[in-house]
Length: 149
Image (tube, rainbow, N blue to C red; front, top):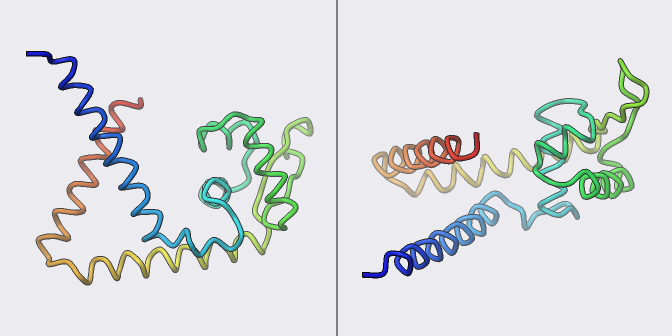
């Protein structure tokens, strides 16, 4: 029996399921209502929203992208009026990124839309399915947390 081939098939299945899951969650969370920003840009705005003013380096680490990629996204978001760059309060050499009023409004709209989408999903599930869904997400989060720390 070739366990290497079995592992490859399993890995391919996991990869396909993960991509499909991300696509479906992306649709459900309203990414098609993008307010003219990409998913990556939304992810950057979301991290800034959750963490407050943040350095470009820390933002890149939290988003999981290279500093050059993060800087490019910040430049686009600045041009769109969604974020602004300021000098750090403790070290003027550090550039800190924060949301503008327009960026905060975008986050409120998107979060409202996401919550409404999830509410719509939950309204179609039985109580047992809801609990199973939440427990599955908790288990997945726990497993991924162990693997990524």
